[in-house]
Image (cartoon, rainbow, N blue to C red; front, top):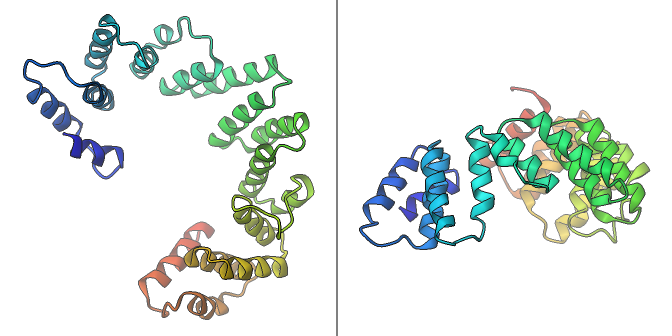
Length: 277
């Protein structure tokens, strides 16, 4: 059962939930289930859509005085089962309420809950960051950008807000705004988390010489060769210089033109460009 559970959690196998549930019940005998096995059983019942059985297990745990995370888990199962009123009853944490509404498929309500929480505590940068992240996850880029900007105005030196805003600009294909608005660190001072952002911003903003210099530096510093090659490819394609792509990737990776890894890099970039070729 535990081996199957690992496969399901890793996304490598679907439809095995019922097998795991049967295996757990078969090995139960007359003994109580260990806590981690009971948690796995509830998880599999929930994934299988057997919400009433999952709730029964959780209620049993609560009746036995095993609190821990079971109260929160009960709310999540109720939300997944569409019983959102019961799930939200007595829940005053705005972020958790939003999570429950999302689990119930009420995405607009989930965003509205976070928006109201941010407006209520408008001086808390963290509330605006949470709202901006949720809006970005739903593709509401302009709203997300405004929320993150609000967080930045409250904490101008906060790295989290500046990085989030930079990533939103990149998602909107406005790499030029990364440098104009996000105050990124200088190339020589940038930490690892900023480096991919800087590369993409330079490419989108047409700062080819700087992008090339940074990619060369990252190559010397031992960054992932395939990632660097993909960025060279992206820059060359943006510049309309696909003819030099093969030679540059071969120089970086030693892939031959027909190498499957070379073809995969090209296919990934074609997909990113919306080109089926």
